[in-house]
Length: 275
Image (tube, rainbow, N blue to C red; front, side, top):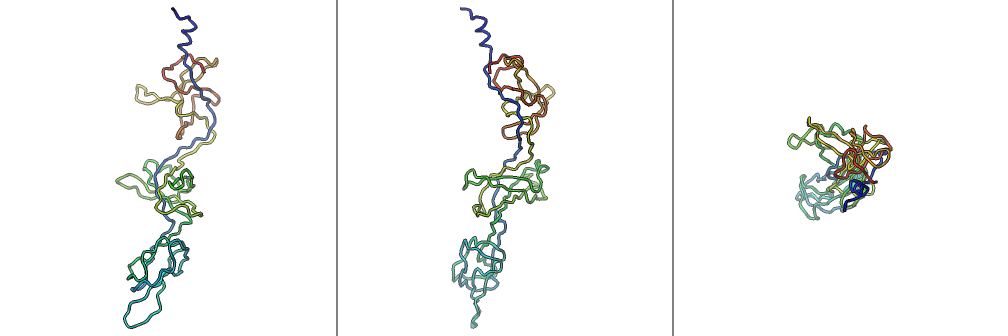
């Protein structure tokens, strides 16, 4: 049996979903791996040779600058000296004590590691091509495995003046608050650095915008716009701006409020649609 004209028309009709061009905030992010370091770290050495008499403070204890954290007994034969104090050179906490009482020490033997972790540094290597978009005070956020999806805010604090000639990266230091002490030196961080942000601009999901290569080798972006009556489409070139993980800023070609179709294969200029 011949299909009726109406049935034939329906089979040529594409069932589609649409998306409306709407005003959104578009952020362009750079995703990087980084490592957390204490804001300050100091390895503490004794001033004399001798034996470690006592670790006055233990790992995790708070210590102030110039406060004694260990006592050394001098080993000079035939004389009795007061134990020599080993002071901390910074404010912080004892991150590690290296020796047990009775151990021999010289002026080059590390006795303890003191860390100041009220703030932490996060070191990331940024590919050279992005460096023009990095500036002091720029916002970032990062996660660490121990805290799942918790986002820690950070700011760019230091940009290395040199580019590594082998890897073509620049080391950038971020600064993050760590008042609650949850971030520890040595943690691995996943960092999201905001390169650029535009607020309230016409935008579409990446999936609604298609690209094609033209004969001269350049590429053009286009969308299929739903025509007035809502049952056919027109192909229209658009100019895209900032790109985030899932959204394009649309600079020109379609206006806020226009409907475009989320792409379906086989659609072309003038295709009949059913929304």
